[in-house]
Length: 416
Image (cartoon, rainbow, N blue to C red; front, side, top):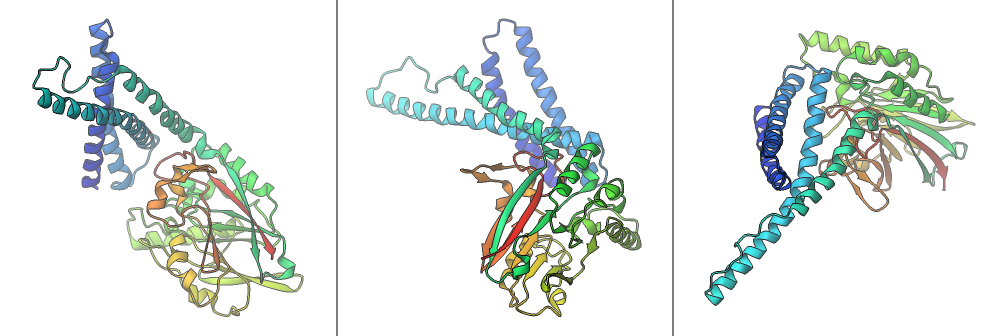
């Protein structure tokens, strides 16, 4: 953790130094020398203080297991300004590449004609480029400000129609609402959360599923929202699974028994909400005399705990039965499900959050999540099997969402 903090601190200081070159250029022609000095001193006072505050809060959050609104503010502020400065630096760097090329050209020219040029070898920075960098840096800055205030509660419904040749006729048009990664311990605006839950209820799907990470660490985190989630009902039931955070593996427990008691309490809360928690097991959903299998496994993830036992969950399910699997981490699909000898038609996952930051447009789709997860959000098809990765209902770590909005998924199954 110390090395990580030091690494981020060094990178941030480098960005600060680079941005400062632009600040100096913008303020260079100000008439008041006192104002110039005040702005420049304020720049270093603020950003060095931000680095120190961030280092302390990272330690408190991840080493001492303490989180407060002040901790969240420092993390949000650091990430906001880190991305903002990065954009500013990219503009200045582009100018520096140009300045360097001009310097090389002038150097060769001087060597060729043997004369002393009047112009300096390296061109001065242009004020316009620094102003342009500042203007462009304002885009991510205001995007992050929105994402940390309103964007994290900008619940968005994603609808998809999925076609299967072997879907039972009775389930043609069957709808599923999926939530994932509620992370109830991160919420600060209960009213906004209730609006999101109401939006999920309004979908009036045939089946409701929740695919893990109900809490950050403690079972008690979900308790304020149990009455609201208890109202989520579907004709064919409400089902859920556990995610990696639900096991309390990121909390400093006083004993193993305390961690086990917390997990037992959380399982009871699933029941309190009317969710049937599937732990490496399956249920048969019946409609008009035909059946499909809903399968739920414990967490299985690359780089995370691997408790899920798909073989156990499939025990007793006939090979030709239509199957829907709830598995929190999409790497389970990538490494196990898609190559399993038993054909699982559809897997529903979450976990990635789309890293809570990214761009999703018809032309551009990017998130840092793609450098770790092959399938990080939305629909994927491999080996004749479908995977849907929900972007998450809540947030954790970074208390915001920028471009990757909290999701309520509605899937319609069709035969064909």
